[in-house]
Length: 276
View 1 (cartoon, rainbow, N blue to C red):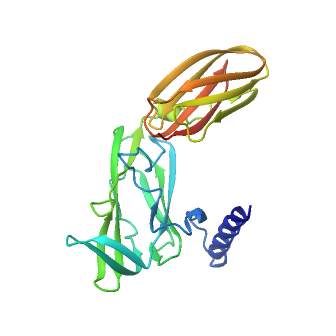
View 2: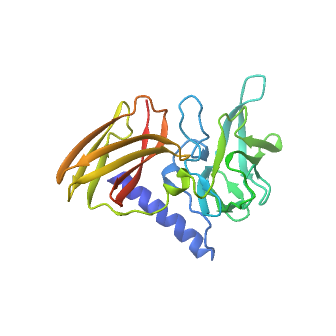
View 3: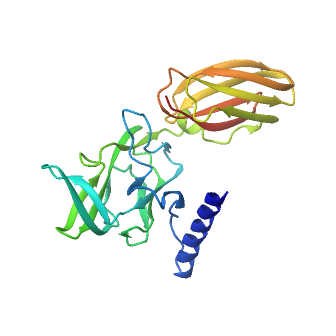
């Protein structure tokens, strides 16, 4: 309870700070990361654990927004080729127009602070925002965030994130407006008459559902990955009252998924994660 209140007050303080400065922030840093190790959050996608990265698809001709929280430390350990080296930092900055490469046409980035100058140990943020145009081809767009680090020993040093020093990958999945990735994110179903709960969080070997249905009827439970690919589809007969359902996920890769329960046009879609 105490930690929750601290997060809430930190969030309010950040918002009020920008409000008092006469600015409407394009994004608000997530105060959850105020005591985290330095970096950009969410962290880059990790090929080994299948975690991190951008868990939201860009749908052509539809509004898109995805925020990153940035925390620059006063000290950072890097490998300069001759072993670990502790580098002192005074801050970091991004070019306001050309720092993020690989973006689809129509998607831009904005910073908070607006000049993209990040202070040491002060949370900032970057938001990817816009509407991908039809000239983009569906597929994966690899991104790089190019920073200028203001060091105490070497002056301004350019650093790419991610890179060999900062491993991982950032990419955007661009999908056609009528693809599963985009249709599953649209609110097309009327609200499900009842309630749906899934557990555990995250799922490991199986995902269990407790479904309280107000009426009986045939239903479909569909699971898509974050790129819209259908992973599984199960047809079930719901009975009025409480229903139990188990979906094996041991063969799913680590990551984020979306399940959709559809009972005759009444449905609900929610995200869940798998971690082995």
